[in-house]
Length: 636
Image (cartoon, rainbow, N blue to C red; front, side, top):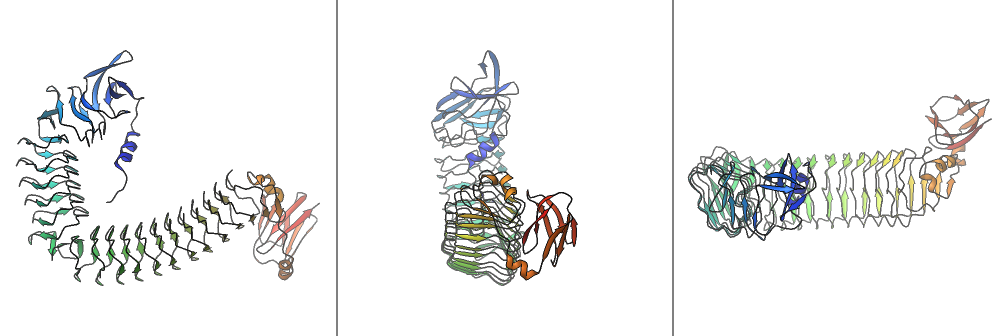
């Protein structure tokens, strides 16, 4: 799985979930109080030099034992040279000493019941797990007692060039050697059975690795961004390969799998599952593409970062393209997807900046989120009639996209679907679409014409915000709600007509629409709005005949200083031959097809239906609305 959430954001999110008192500082070290003990936390300023953590502290006259070091407490303290841990500390959080570039040693009290140290390296008490090697310690002898190289234990040790792992070790933890950029080779003993996720990610100098016959599992992205790796051999013992194990290995030329492996296979240096129905990884440096007809699916990240590929032909046997499958193939200029393909996964063509044209098959039923994200040179695309939805951020950042045809089969457009498609000038939303997601067309500054679906019931938050080229838009009669900020910053919008069906408009929906000259509302009952739905309350507000009082009384609508009633259409009344009148508190409605609605002047619904007569007990003015006219009647 790909994630671009920064580590520091994740750290903050996790820390915010901890119940804590206000942080305080004693002798240059920062603490929280939890469960009658003190925990070392990240300080307002980075720790540096030699830090000695005391066994206890005196705070406001009370003595508290120091029991733990919080997650990431010393993260990124580049000036820290050594840390001494007392026997009272029985818990050390994840990444506590990560990215401490000058850290030379970690010293643990001999009396500590949980942790120990040897030659400045942190271990558990019985030294069966290596927990953290200081970043500045480049020569490490691992004792034979160690059975596990712990998570992140050598991460960011940039000066480490080689390491000898003893035969006692059976597992390599997640991120164990993450970003050890100086590591050129590593020999894993025959005792190792598992290699964790991201274990050697970003080991950019690693040119070769021998995977022993004992290994049964290799975790997600274990060798991701190993840019110097050219060849890998997978033994018969490996039963599980995580996703993206060799992602972004830009110089990888071949992957060789033992013929005896029961799960995986290789052909011409390409990695497949055993029966070659799924293509798992195409080496980045392999530029000639011939995919066997047996393949039915292109696996996750299969062609990721294959910069040199310019064209790819998929066989007619392929039915699905996995997540991130062709992401960052920046040299790819065009692609025809065969008629057999039904599914395009999330981020499948993410960042394919050279892609100018792509042909989608009529068999396609699903396009994943961010599928064409940042395909900045894609100019046009026709979506097939089989497609029912467009996912989140599917075409975000496609700045070169000037036209797109949406099929009548489409029912929904996801959030951020066309964000910053600045080249898009017109869009027609087919009548099958019932909802437009949040920010779907945000920042489409070139958009001048939008035709909305007649079936549309809701427009999401910020859906057309920042569409500065939009001058007018007609909203369909089916629409019941407009979200917050939907048309904010549409600086070219001069008029807006709101349909009778509308019941709510979100706050700031028309904020910063500086050129707006009038607002026309056909709803007899004033829709709910916020205090900042509109900016300019000096422009005319046109409301249905007989409804001025209702709008003058309605919350926030009353801010409009120039509310005018629209006259009923005489021609419509005559053409329809409708006859609407009152006799003795009885409303008569003649020659009107379908339902009609009766409101008070404050917008309260009195009657809805198609009866020929309606009793109106209270004297006053009423508004009768049909599908084609609005008429006042008076009951005396």
